[in-house]
Image 1: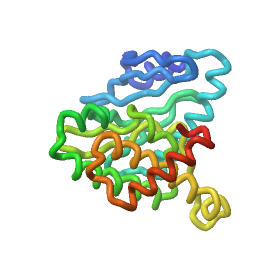
Image 2 (image 1 turned 180 degrees about the vertical axis):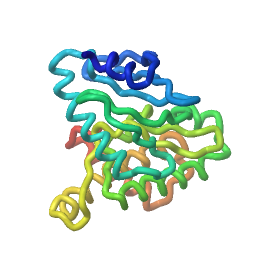
Image 3 (image 1 turned 135 degrees about the vertical axis):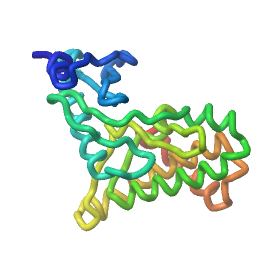
Image 4 (image 1 turned 120 degrees about the vertical axis):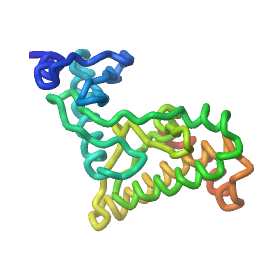
Length: 211
């Protein structure tokens, strides 16, 4: 039984394809639920190699969403569909780049909110690791940031060895991504300390894969 057929039996309505995932990417589908709908990230129709990678991504996303459950600005987790699919809340908003172009007077408040959201995420032991991708930060009409796509994320226990040694570096990767967006979209908001950090991280990024 395919993933889509199994889901159809549970929801009494077929998923609606919103975006066909490219190479190594999940298909994004809209699934009717109650009076609204949720989002299904689905690797079920992909090649065997992509499905294999997709299982890892699905596990990572679920782990992060469960850790961040009920955190405003992060999709609510609605369950797993087989080994290759994850259901979650659909977050409404525009890409951070487009939103900042349209709302120059509100960028300071939005970036403050985004920094607080990332800090709360880190306090809960989650590093996103892909915030440099503009699709992964959305902003609502009233200027509230949302973070999506946790398929590359890592979760840590603060007192564990990884939490004490690796997690601080991963936190800086997230923070450097926020500073990148601030430097591009609202450079006048950067403090002197943030400018120094951004320059240092820009030089360091040349040595790693998170560009």
